[in-house]
Image (cartoon, rainbow, N blue to C red; front, top):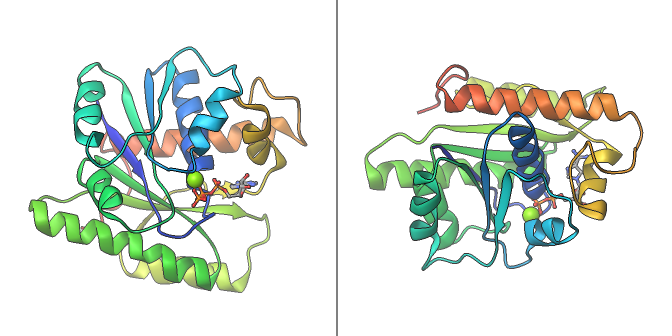
Length: 224
Ligand SMILES: Nc1ncnc2c1ncn2[C@@H]1O[C@H](COP(=O)(O)OP(=O)(O)OP(=O)(O)O)[C@@H](O)[C@H]1O
Ligand SMILES: [Mg+2]
C-alpha cells in the first residue's frame, strides 16, 4: 500500500495538520492508516495522545533514521496507507522518508518566504530521484489559504505551475477547525464544533480525495 511523505524544510508550513487531515479522512473513508511521527517535536503523537483517534489509525512515535525503512516496509505490507510526518528541516531522515514515498506532499503557504524555502523540498525530491533512478511523484498543497487570494499567492502558484509542479486542488483553507484538531485530538467529526464544520469537512474530504486520486495514478500532472 502507498507511502505518503509530507515534507517541507519550512517550519509551520502546515505539514502535521495536512497529515492529520489526510489520515483521518482516509480512515473515515474506510482505509487502514499508519501514521509515522518522525518529528522530534512529536506533533502527531501529541495529537493521538489526546485520545479519540479513529479506530483504523495507528500512530507510531519516535521513528528515526535507523528504523524508518524497516517500519515503512512492515506497514506497507500489512495493507495500510502509510503517512510520514517530518520535522521542518532538510536532513538525512527527511531524504530517507522521501526515498520511500509513492507520493511526496509539500504543504506551502502562499507567501514568497514560504515558497522560497518550500521549493527546497522539491529539490530534495529531485536529488532522491537522481540517486534512486526512479521518479517520485510529488505535489504541493497550499495551506492556510483565504477565500480571497493575494496577488503574491496567485503569482507563486502560476510560477510553480509553469515549472510543471503538480498542485493539489483544493488547497487547505485557514479554518479554526483544522487548528483545533491539535487542541482536542480526534477528527473533524469528534471535535467540538468550530465555525462552519461542514465547510471544513468538505475541504478536508476534497483534499484527501485529490491525494487518493494521485495514489491511484488518476490525477495530477507529473513534474518529473
Ligand atoms: N489550514 C489551517 N487552518 C488553520 N490553522 C492551521 C492550518 N494549517 C496549519 N495551521 C496552524 O498553523 C500552525 C503550524 O501548522 P503545523 O503544525 O501543521 O505546521 P508544520 O509544518 O507541521 O510545523 P513544524 O515544521 O513545526 O512541524 C499550527 O498552529 C496549526 O494549527
Ligand atoms: Mg509538524
